[in-house]
Structure formats: C-alpha cells, structure tokens
Image (cartoon, rainbow, N blue to C red; front, side):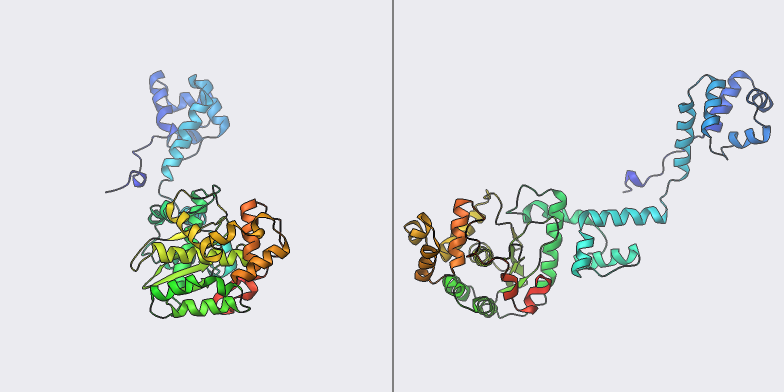
Length: 375
C-alpha cells in the first residue's frame, strides 16, 4: 500500500492558466493585455506559459487589472512552484534523516563518549545508527512500544525525547553486556551473596570483591554513564542466559552505589528469570513508583543493608550524629555512608552528613575495564 504522503498531488495550474481565463472572459488578446499592462508581448507570453515566477509587482498589477488581490496571484504562483518541486531533493532527504536521528538519539553526547564515530556524511551516520540498534533499516517506530514499558521508575521530568534517550542508553547497555564472559548463572549463589551484601560494603576492597563474586555467580556487572536528558542510577535486565546489572555513576557517592546495587539485585532475585525480556531502568531519586515491583525492590534493598528492626530503634535514626551513625555501622558491619544516606533520605535533607556519604569517590573505586569513561 502506498502512503498518502508519498503520492504526488494532482496537476496544479499556474497563474498563466487563470490569466488566460480572465482574458477569455473579457475577450482580450495578448496584445490587448500587453497594451493595458505595459508589459511586452514576449514577457507576457513567458508569464502565460508559467515559465517565469510572478514578482510582487506583477501580482499587484494583475490584481488591479482583474479586480482581485495581489495575494490571490502570489498564492497561485507559490502553490504551482511547490507542486513543480514535489519529490524531495537529496539534500532534503538527508536533512530529514539527520533530524529524525538527532530527535531520537543524543548524537553529540554519543560522539563525545565514543559511542558513535565521527562521520563525514549522513549515510555514514545512518549506517552507524542501524548497526547500533541492530536493525535492517532505519525505523524508529520500533522504539515506540518500548517507551513506557522500560521506564518503570522515572522522574516526572521525562517526556518522549528523554524516554527515547533512555532507551538509547539501554541499547548501549545491551551491546556492552555482550562483551562480558561470566560463569553460568546460579540463582542460589546470588541469593547467598545478596544476603551478605552488607558485609562487602565495609571492606576496603569491597567493590572489587563484590564484582568478582557477582561474576562467579553468573551476574554481569559494569558501569555505563548516563546520557544527557536521562536520569538513571542503574538497570537490571537479561543478556542471553545471564542477568546484567549496570550502574551509571550519576551520583558519585558510596551510599548511592550500594543502594543502587542492592535495588537492581533485588529486581534480579524477585522479578527476572531466564528468557525474560523485561527491563528495569531506575531513577532512585524519583517520586516513589506506583509499580509494586519497584516498591518491593526498594524494601528488600533497604532491609538487606539495614534491617528494619535495627533501624527503627537506633540512635542513628532518632538522633543522628557522627558517633551514632558510626556506632550503628560498626554493629551491622556496613559502611557508615549507608547509614548516613538513610538518614538523609528519610529526612529529605541531602546536604546533611555530606562528609560521611563518600561524595565524589565511587568512580575511582572501579576497575578500569568495568568503568569505561566514568573514571
């Protein structure tokens, strides 16, 4: 079926046709009209044959002669010229292609990150985009069905373009996950690791160790920075037969890393199974989601790091000081940044206890092969 936008409009008549029509009504010849307007017969013949666009002066003159507006004649002429130009030029086609790509993907940011290579032509850019998405041809409508389902935990700042950029990030994460070789996934082994996650947080090399043990349990982990106009802390999804967890490093803090990791692990334990095409893209600073899966992941992550029974009666919660926070952290064998982060979250005071949450340090803790360009 041919789309209506691809159909060429029916024959459009130029101003010459309508001038001749007016002449016939008045029984005028070309010589008569030449005499009346002061235009040479040769020049007038070009206008009658639509071989010459009308000038504004000519449109005004015709309006006076035939008792119409000048706009009437300019509209006819413009409409005719546009009809002649139907069938877009190569330049127009290329501009349309680039506009579509730039609308759906943050091309400049991707170039800066090295996700796309510099290109010399629209064709080169288009080829890279098709390869990036693993498409046979350029077709962004394939993203529309994914727009809502993937963004299960997002801020109100998202619109269709932010969502499209987030899906671009997700596709990059899918592509990167294919580069990792880990052990066969064993859910029971991961559950044991998850139950002991708090112990990793207090170790000097805890991040290195948890990443190593995740790989041993068959879980892919790596860091991928967010793109502009996206607000993401992390993601959980399946890559082949292995679950994958991605951390963006958006908030370069110790407490944010451990809670994001716990949240995404909770999704893997509770919600994902082999062959599952579901994806969790999470903005953990967003307004609490109506999705019960997000609430479940939040609750399990919080309980794993700081058990509710310990938190509710702790001095760190009711009278937070450096001493009370460090005391609870020592008793639970967790990093003090996690306790401080919990206090900040509950009190909605994200300026307090900054010296304890490990500001601007997490990116330095990742092995280079996992951290990409966030270091």
